[in-house]
Length: 60
Image (tube, rainbow, N blue to C red; front, side):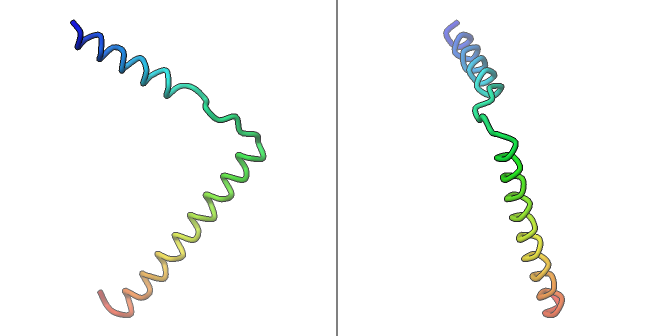
């Protein structure tokens, strides 16, 4: 019986904590974060492109 209660308590805590909006971001903050993530993605893709070019020259 204690195990069922413990599982139910963990489940309820997990559900309630995951559904709350913990961050009150403004539209400008969201735009800034989106721009930052996009720039990180572009940098990552550029590095991968250079590694692919190097691998082709080495013929791996």
